[in-house]
Image (cartoon, rainbow, N blue to C red; front, side, top):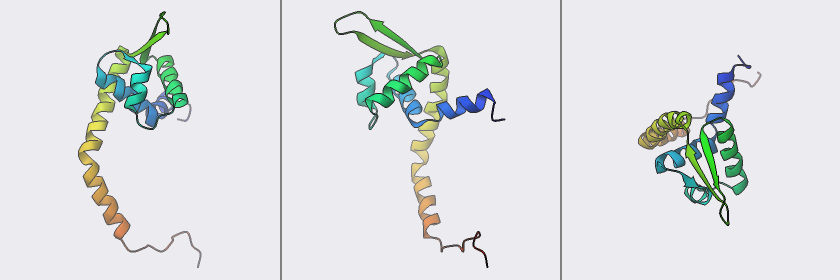
Length: 123
């Protein structure tokens, strides 16, 4: 199971920066410049965004187009494969936005419970 290609791919697409990058480009609906993507994703470093975009390009999710101008213009857009993943990720994003209050309430209830004895402690 550890050598399963699906497990490796799930590990990649569950990455925080991958999902944020995919949702940013997908929501825009057109090719986006690197600087625009960077401005839309709070907290992403230049290094992390560059690594994420390269990984997504390698995996066939994103198409990178460089236009030879001064300075060089680089645009990113979702491929058909990436659009399929974006559809799923946007559903998860929408679910998270819709259920955030319920999750916060569940966390508060859990945190308010009396402490349980540590089941690993020896007698």
